[in-house]
Length: 308
Image (cartoon, rainbow, N blue to C red; front, side):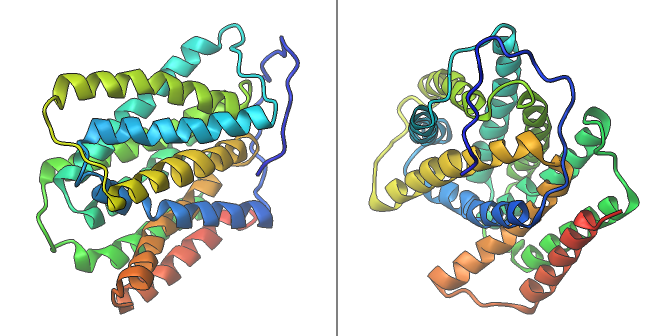
């Protein structure tokens, strides 16, 4: 876990955006996060069997807030807001809420495999937004080619499964929109953590989002059945503790210092890890498309991270 950074009260915002080249350890940690994130869409699908979308989001981020808040207190990070931070956190929270609404609702309406591929177009949007808003993160030819190659690997991997199960165009579109919001959230987070401690940022936008999920559950999902089974409990613990807890903490801290557009392409490995999880846990077949996709994703990662 990244080291603690205790800020003195009244620390002025840093004017420059830090975007260092990621080194081997950071790339390895990012790949671990990408691997863990591979279980997110499947765990959402499992959780939606027992909870409606907004209720699932609420309980997930309650767990995430406990993990993030507990770690922040353990590291003695000041959680009090500084002057001017609240408005920026409201903006980030709004993007976050819209992203989760689209993701959970869309995943309920489509299959897990389709949800996986559409949410993972977000590196395209991250690179695009970073090109305009983050100094030093311009789209170069190798970076653009690497993103295209990596996404091609993702598509080849999941394409054979896209015709299976019930699908919904509306669900696909909602998850695709969620990917756009996620790409925007990565860039806005990158900008905000230059002046706001990463852990304080996480605690506040998770806290601000919870009343919204609760209100939408009461208004839109009243009367819908909810039950806590072993499967849904495991799904909630994974989404809340592993993803919204550990992964959010590590990824937000990484974004404070390292290039967003170079690191985000590593998350094209996320749907591939989902296939690996399915093989190890469910015995799904390792197909040629998986192997070809893995090679293309690795090639894309190399192109994006190669020294210019």
